[in-house]
Image (cartoon, rainbow over all chains, first blue to last red; front, side, top):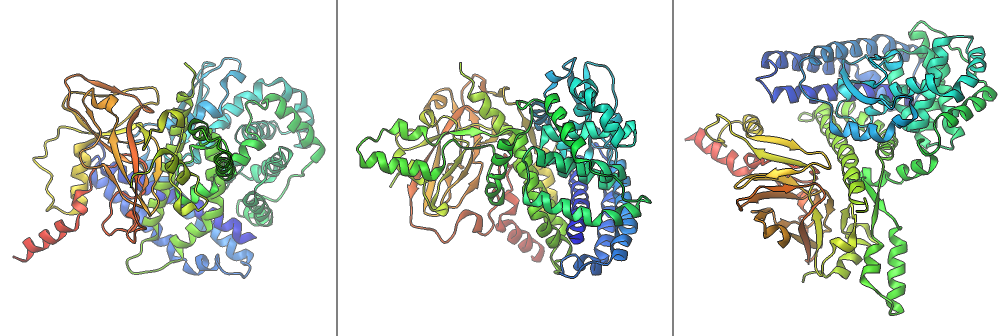
Length: 429
Length: 209
């Protein structure tokens, strides 16, 4: 179980390294904008980081055996190795951030248009996205320029990653948490359970609203962020509440339950690495009342629902085959085939009737992102293995990972964009 | 044998996933299907040639350097879903289908323009008309405007039609062909001509002479 959690953390780290390499490659293609010497120097640092990470082959191979990992081995890696690797990556990304000339992708705004129902906010603000260095994910106390603008901060390494865009909804959730009357009513009760901590209460409200908007994708994304930010309060108080919240909404997936249980077994070791103790009591009655209030703050028509999650889960095969996930058939294929056999047998076949039965409906960006997260959680251990545990003379695991990540990002981006074109073409003139 | 609309439909519903034609999204099949073809739509990303100070694309250079040169020559243009890409008279641009297409191993396909657009001077391919068995991804358009009026091309517009030919099952599907360069691409890809094996051989011959 602890290995499951460790694999999650190690995979998230190597994926971020692969994303850094991708951005560096983009810079290399524009030598007039970014000094080739600097690109070469950063590439060398990236290679050194990967070499260092792969040097601990004993630990990495241990991740894929059946024997339990000793606590001290886990603690050493999480506290010393992981911390050092991530700090190196963070500093490399910080150097790149002001130099990188790419803008936020238009698909990001298509995603936010659907994920953030700004009419729930008093001023229906315009949404702006600002690229930030790696490690700065904090719109919990984010920049608030005016009531007309809502600023979401996107770490540069997540620029191309639709799964990473999930965290952008947090800025919206923070603002909504302060405006929604339903939440004001339960605030005192929540504060009492959280030892009267205002900051923690604010955090619980914001994360829970974001979960209501984004579903399981938000659970995965916020957990990854919390590990990299060493957010002990999140692990102690927020994560258990989010898990209860998903159950409350009837949304569970095998990978989600496994990760939650793995985290539960690993929490004590992880928190001690950060100098904190395991704390936090899950008050189920308080949470039940709290999540009812969250549902009032974000009505069903704006929320990510069980039905949408079912549709997202049905897209796993497409992801496995690299097929676009922008739309799905209105009618199941087998049913349509049976129907056609039937009408042909009864001499009632009409070509236009038959054709209408292969019409597809567009998926939403949130469905695409949730599908992506569920698939990634299932496949990440395999991707991790082929990056760090496979050896070979001409084999470069990180190169292959970068290609895989590029392809995955591209597929999800194109799915989001194509679904928008699809929706436009459905508009009745 | 060219498949008619009913046969195309049946292959889209084939119970064997390996034999199934995949075209997604199918937005308005009653508008897209013809007697022996399915209309495909324009996507949102384009590559146009731009003026540079490179004298020519030299295939004798190191492949990584040629790749950079090609990148310099090509300008990537992305339009918003409700924004037109204007193809000016005499202009050439690469684009790709909105749809993701997968051709089973026992079918080949042919992409052609729709005469609606042909009559305005839009040509949608020079060489990219043939689609191999086993192909999967977005199909490339090689767009040319041979008229003397600029053409506004919106994403989602049906600019082409795809028809299918029965074959016997191939042992050499597109993705498994040696030196295949564009397999699985879902966005507009520029030329990777320098990856053709002839260039490596010519380079070697030059070195050894």
